[in-house]
Image (cartoon, rainbow, N blue to C red; front, side, top):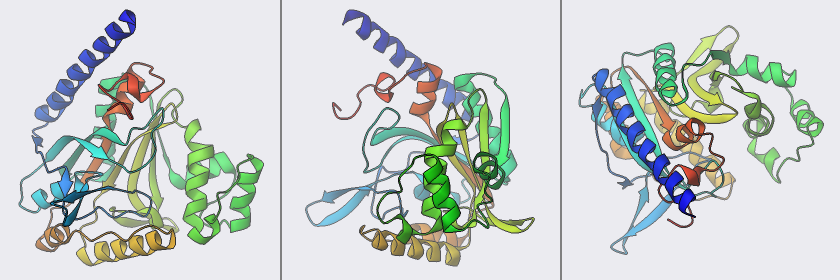
Length: 318
C-alpha cells in the first residue's frame, strides 16, 4: 500500500509538471489563457455526446460543459486573439480504462491557421508528453480503404455489414436506422482505431462531410470532406481538431440536424446556444482549433493501463 501511495504521488507530481509544461508551450507561442465557465446555460449539441444536466435553484436546467468551445468562440468574436484553456469537461457516459466522465482537456484556437498548421502544432504539443517519435498522416478515405479494402464513399450497406461480419462484430440493435455514418463509426472504432499509431503518431484527416461537426468542408478530388483531424497513438484517440466553420446559417442547420438525430435515437433534444450563434453572426476571424485529452497523454507518458493511475481521483471514488 505504501509503495502504491508513493507511485501515485510521483505521478501526480509529474502531472503538475506537465500542466506547467503545457502552459509554457502556449505562453511561448503568445497564446492567452482564458477560463470560460464550466456550467453553461445552453448545451453543446452532438447526436452522440450526452451532457450532464444540473438544476439551478430548482427552476432552471443548466449543463456541465463537454468542451469550452462555445465560450471560447464567443471570446474570439471580440477579437481577443489566440486563446487556450485547460479545463475539466464532462460527458454523461460510462467510465473505463481510458475514460472518466470528468476529464482534463487542453483546447486552443489559432487565428489564421489552416488545417495543416493546426495539425503540426498539435503534434508538437503531443510530443511534449510522449517524445519525438515519427508522424504518419493519412486521409480518412485512404485509411478506411487500407484496413477494410472498401471505399467508404461508394460503399453500400451490405459491404459495410460484411466488414463487421468478417471481424466477428455484431452491429448493435437499431444501427440501420442511424444510417451510413453509424456503420462507419462502428468500423472505425472497433476495427481501424486499434491499428493506428502503434509506433508513431498517426494523424487521421479529411473526415466525411457528414461528420464535419463544427468544421468547414472543402472539395478534394471527387468528394466533399470535412477539414477535421484526429490524432492517435497506440490505438488511443488523443484529440479532435477543426478548421472552424464560421457560417452561422450552416451552423444552425447542423444543430437542428443533430437534434433530429438525437430524437431518432430516443435522446432528448438540446437547446441551441444562441450566444454562440450570435458570436458567429457578429463575426469570428478565420481560425483553426483543437481539443486534446490531457489525461490520455499522461497515460501514454507513463504506460498506464488505467486512467485512475494519472488523476487525483477517478470515477466512482471522486
